[in-house]
Image 1: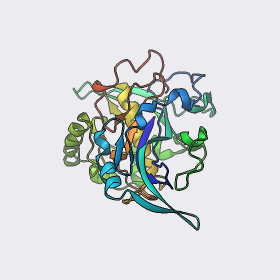
Image 2: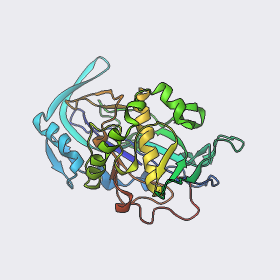
Image 3: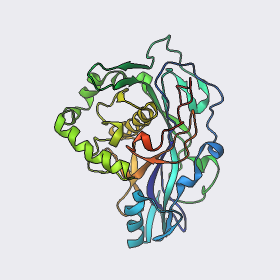
Image 4: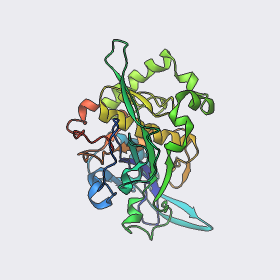
Amino acid sequence: MIKSARTLLASLALGVAAPVIGTSPAQASKCPTGTMFNPITKVRWNCIFPITIGGVRIGSYDKLDKALDAQSASAPLCACRKGLQFWFGVKVSFWSPNRMIDVVTEPGCMMALGADLMATGGKLQGSQSSISDGTNTRKMFAQMHYYISPVWKMLDMFTDLPCIEDDGFDVALVTEVLPTWQSGSLGAIIQPEAILFGNPAAGLACMADSAAAAAGKVIDPLFWCMGSWGSTYPIAGDIHFGDSVEAWAGLAARGTFMMGRLGALTISSSDGCSFRPSPIWTKSRYKLQLMEPVKGGKCVNIGRPGALWTSGKHAPGKDNS
């Protein structure tokens, strides 16, 4: 699950839009049943905190919320427009579960729907392989499914508040139909900037992002880095890994980045009163929570080292989540 923080405003209301993600492992396995998304039991609700209302924080402190708190405190009131109507109110920010991602080794396995809906005849299967370069690292390939899953709307909460995204549940993307996800070389054709970041100098910059991620922070300008999870490029289903759960999270985060490159990602504006397109993600606005096969006990920032949060999260034989 990924939660993303966006400051939104509503007339005396709430509003931060955030994504939810469900990730999955990387060895071929049958699609499990009984994984239908239940927003009441699957969401780690303590991750919505802290909530900031007009600059006043409620709940625990989170390093990633510093900029949002400052934004809300400097201008606690603002206006937003919905259609032809303007609304005025108090600015509220919090972490909201709004998106969900499956990372699966069984093609067509829609974990959020609890069913295998796409027969591929054994093709496009996920895999793992060792890399004989002396580093003891491995390479994983998996498919990704991106869902729009606005939990507040699904629970019929805050539906009377303007200036909040009100999309319904939908399957926004399945990578099985994307040739570019199956091949990093094909991906480079439509994402030519990947060539700029596929060099040792750009890789060394990611060391700083990895150190920041271990401390619970991220470095937003290093958008091509995912901390300890690797690089956002190439935007494909292959990823190098040492920790399986880390790799699932890395592919889920890469899927979020890809949605931005496809023009399907938004973020709150600088004043926190509206949404704007986000072709390049702002990593500090996202947190992830593992939903399947083992529910995560906490939400983690992009790139957080697996040694700090993945223990006991890979149930034996459960390779889709």
